[in-house]
Image (cartoon, rainbow, N blue to C red):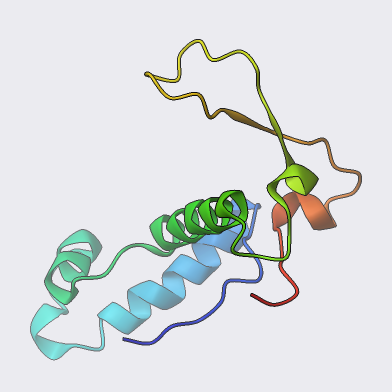
Length: 113
């Protein structure tokens, strides 16, 4: 399986749709799947949508930051919320720190892992 690092996550709907169209085109390259819908093609190819993949990568990155596996500290991007109401039994609740400018609002990066 190929592995890559996500460095940018589009926040504009038009950008997300444009990237997803490329993914649609890729799944149509398989002759026996061309007549099927996008969801069915993804299922048969054992793929996720690009949005699902970006969300998964974001969750993995936050987990690595929380566990101390990255140079970027979890406290640089999030603050721990003392209000544990509604966390279904666990004590970890994070709130995003306020950011200035859109650059840091659309992705977080790590200068090496």
